[in-house]
Image 1 (cartoon, rainbow, N blue to C red):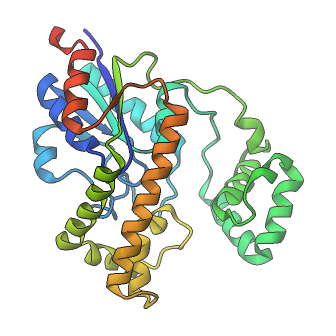
Image 2: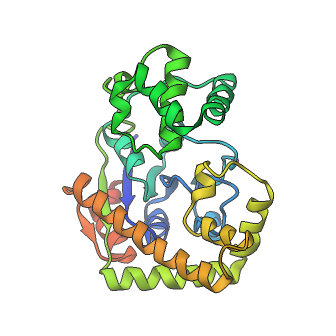
Length: 306
C-alpha cells in the first residue's frame, strides 16, 4: 500500500487550508494541522480554523484538541502528528500536513531533540519560583545550570521557565538535550510546497479575513477567552488577533484601534513567516495561490497511481 504524504506550508491567510481541501478532494486525502494556534479549542475563529463545511468534505486531525490553559509544545505536536499520519496511512489515505508553524515542519522533516515530559508539580514549581524571585534572579538561576541559555532574550519568560523545568525534571541542561538528534516524522514526503502569494495580495487577504472574523464573532470568542483569566504568558493569550481584542476588553484600546492593530500585527507575523520559509525551506517549490499549489501537488505526488 502506498503511503502518500504531502506538506503545504505558508504564511497566514495564504490559502493553505483551501489548497489542502482541494487536494484532499482530488486524491482522497485527510488533513493534519501543522499550525501552533489552530491546536487550541479556544481559538476557533481567531486562528482561522477550517470551517465545518471543509471538515465535512475531508477528515481533519489535530485541530482544536488542546485546552488554552495548556502550554502545548512542538514535541507534543510532533508525537501526535506521527500517530495521526500513521493512522491515515493504515486506512489507505494520503496524509496532507498543512500550516504555518516553521518549527512543526522542521519536526516533520528533520525531527526535534527529545526533551522529557514535564510533571505537573515541576511546572507549578517553576511558575511559583519565577513569581517569588522575579525575572532577573530567575534568569541568573537558569544560567547557573545552563549557561547556554544566555542566548535567550532576558524578557523571554516562557523559554526561561522551560529551561528551568527541563533541568529540574531530568537533571540535564536543555541546551544539552537540544543537541541530541531527533527522528523525522516523514522520511521522504511525496510532495511539498510553500504558498507565497504576492505581498500586496497577501496583505489584502489578511485584512479581509480579519474583517470576516469580526463579523463571525471574533470579539465574543475573545471575551470567552478573557473571562477564563488564564496566565497572560500562555501561547493562546498571545495569539495575534486574540491579544489585541482582549486589550480592547481591558480598556486599553477602542475596538477600532484593536482591529487596526490586529491587522498590522498579522501582516508583521506573515512577514516573519515568509522570512523563515525563505531561509529554512528555500529548496521547497513555491506556488502563488491555493489553486496553483493544489494542481502542482497533485502532479508532483504521483497521486494518479492511488
